[in-house]
Amino acid sequence: MRAAPRQRYAATVRWAHWLTVLAVAAAYLLVELGDDDEHGGSAGTAMQAHYLAGLVVLGLLLVRVLGMALGPRPPIVPAPGPLSVLAARVMHLALYLFLLAQPVLGILAVNYAGGTVTLPWSGMSLLALVHADPGAREFVEELHESLGEILYGVIGLHVAAALWHHFVKGDNTLRRML
Ligand code: HEM
Ligand code: HEM
Image (cartoon, rainbow, N blue to C red):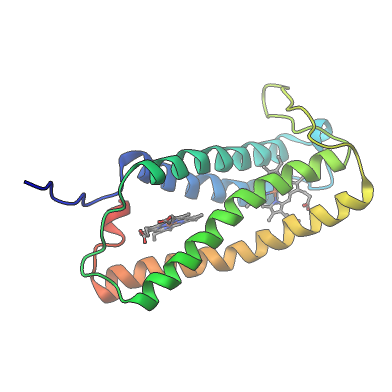
């Protein structure tokens, strides 16, 4: 007898998803509280906590990609049409790319400014990946900032899609992630 398909994502995937939401929100909030002219060792606690939140996002991305690769994806019932499936694929790929690019660009921004990523309350620093380079610093900082703004829109669309599935279509898309 075949086992019934799983109704929700695996617990690791669900936890990683909602902790990512918290960590991304924290990164946005903390960067507003911090002074983004401070870098690495000279950065204040809020900015260091912004680095930490971003590193947590990166760590959770690894957990969830592994979780997704190892576990089956629970089916959406009733099944969405091909256009909907394609839109979701594009959207999720964009989210994954942002979740990877944003922390990496943040780390490079600190290193190109001649600093190291210092963790709050511990004084611990990560090894620098690249040497100081003012030209590259400007480019990477602007990219990090612009992606941060675009990411707001992508997250907005993603949340709107999740709510639309739940409240308008009445399918189980959202319940699979709860
Ligand atoms: C998902 C993760 C992250 C998000 C959403 C994010 C978002 C942002 C945003 C929106 C800004 C611009 C703030 C402003 O100018 O008003 C910013 C600045 C900054 N972030 Fe992040 N960040 C993330 C991860 C990181 C990480 C991991 C680091 C370093 C380890 C980092 C380092 C910086 C630095 C140094 C700045 C100031 C320089 C700049 O304007 O680009 N960020 N971040
Ligand atoms: C910072 C905010 C968020 C980020 C970065 C994020 C990111 C992601 C990513 C990368 C996926 C994986 C898709 C896959 O590979 O199947 C996903 C799935 C999902 N997210 Fe989010 N999400 C966020 C907020 C939310 C919120 C607020 C909701 C609910 C209102 C939500 C509902 C869902 C649902 C239902 C899925 C499963 C979609 C499916 O299986 O087709 N997300 N999210």
